[in-house]
Image 1 (cartoon, helix red, strand yellow):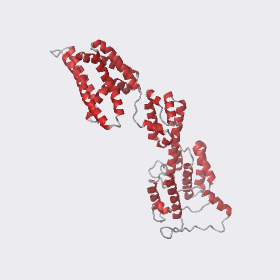
Image 2: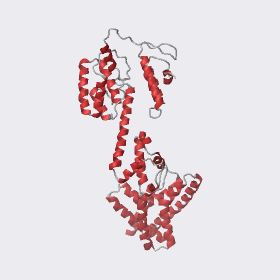
Image 3: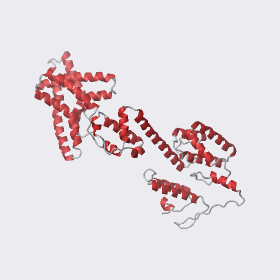
Image 4: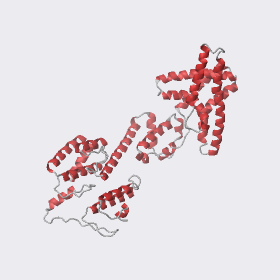
Length: 452
């Protein structure tokens, strides 16, 4: 396959057509997904540009003859070598610059680029000095060539940052903040600069993760070490550490969302483990278990209900907090069984809503005096209003109707933790948690008395 077949283009001297063909093929052969194809495409692009800058293109679709400009026979050898040194820097230039005496060497330009990236202040001083020399003695074409060669040299230096590139752009007037500045820096060099900046960002993110591994909090260090480990499978103890899987998933999602290039460096077994739903201990589950244990420890003696009713009430709360999600998690690979469970839970949840909210509404209405006046009536009306607000707030939106009754009860029983989470676990959220404890003790006591 020749260069024109690689570019999917007929032989031409139009550099605009060559660049457009290169851009079309670049979408198919990205350097991150097809490095071999990208290398062939880049070589074909470079060769096509070189041939386009030759004196003439002749022949059929599979042959291109190039006529090179002859060197003057009387030209001294040192001057020829000096020109060759200046031309060593590969530049994607849309013009054919005439030959002229160089004002800097290839080594000097590379040193300048290295100074700018590694010792910015010294590099800026050297850049100003060289730029002033070009302004005094160089032609406009020499200055334009310098801008392109410097940009190409910067794209070759690891560690290039966006801040440095913006500073160089401001000093030399590149205008990189503009939508199109290809009249100064050709877009292939712009692409190389963007790739280098992206590489710097990815490496910086990796170093920050390594620093967090050494100096971060204990759970963060454990999470990062697991992501970087060479384990063949996730350890079982992950499920026993409260919040560990959530923290691990948060670390992995943050890296993969912003820096997908890091994915090959991470443990693939851990990523596969995190991509699937897992049952594990959580701080929410532990808190709610203690919360409802305190509620029922206070409610059962106050209400005077028998053992059967108290056991049913406790089992109902545990079902919505823990068992329902665990069953659906276990049945996600058996859709037929999952459908039957969801239907059964729907019927059961309708009954629970009727008993829970309906019972509380009934208790509030019964406690209201016949006259409808007085403090007790006001309390009953306030209770009815609060119950209506709670039911409206717990009613989910954007989910199938068959799942809504169950989600209502799950949200009601998990509301103490959700309220603290909404308040960002501040000290004031503890006061609200204690208030929720008192409210649930009172409401559950009154509700269970109806069934005693």
